[in-house]
Amino acid sequence: MTARFAERTLDWLDQRKAWQFVAILYAARWVALAPVMVLSHLVLTEGQKQASAMPEQWREGSPLGLFLGLVVVPPVLETLLECSLPHWVFSKVRD
Image 1 (cartoon, rainbow, N blue to C red):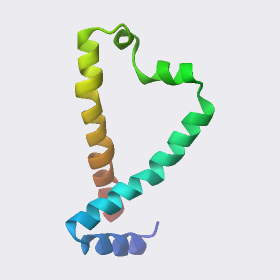
Image 2 (cartoon, helix red, strand yellow):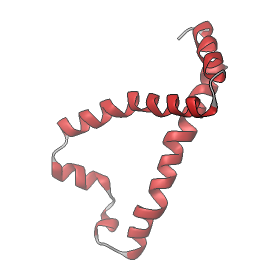
Image 3 (cartoon, rainbow, N blue to C red):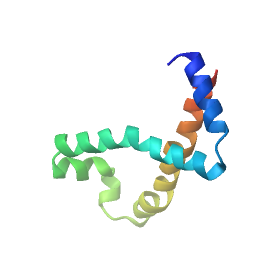
């Protein structure tokens, strides 16, 4: 990606209304997520998917494990993937 193209793209995004900017970023994340989802569906068996989804201690159904797996980890991952990652990428592109 050339610096001029990145600058024009970021300037174009900066001119969008807030809801348009968010919608564009929301749509752009699927460019990265869709191939990963398709590949994981094709490559992993159902047992592997379930085994890779949670650590061993969470599979036991302990209250702490369930709390971490349902209340703490998903919002943290969502924040990292949908907020922090795009911000970091755009900061690297802009520099």
